[in-house]
Image (tube, rainbow, N blue to C red; front, side):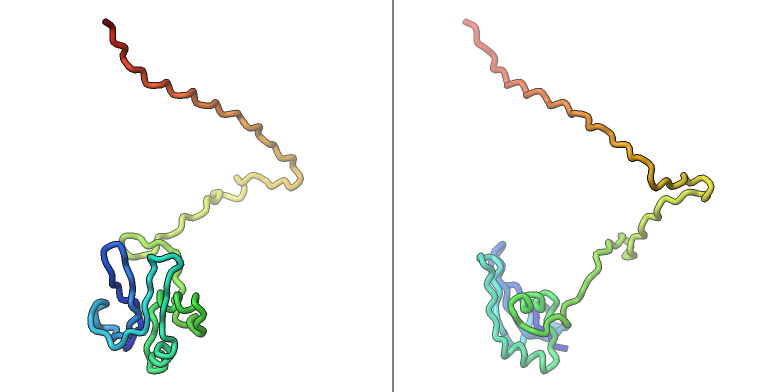
Length: 147
């Protein structure tokens, strides 16, 4: 299976990326079939150069752009990239790989013990207690020399 992905190049802490078409099984920095563009995220504004004709050619041949690359291309006006973007949930995983269970809401043990709901009861508002300001820190005293 072919994939169009970003390949990191550049120096330490000055990353630039090449847009390459490669076999999915190949290493990210390994052998690729064709370079179809470049991306520089260091400069402002970020610089994305790509050959849309070659990208469309490879997609027609069955290549799939990576999620990150599809987002970049969509942001730069390339149509039909939504189908390649994976929507991820923001559920945290536990150390064992299972999603953490949400804490159950505290419910009263019995319905009789629950306080009755009064709809038109007046609401009590607590007055704000002024917070005492901190005293300014004493300046560091320098020892005086005596002669």
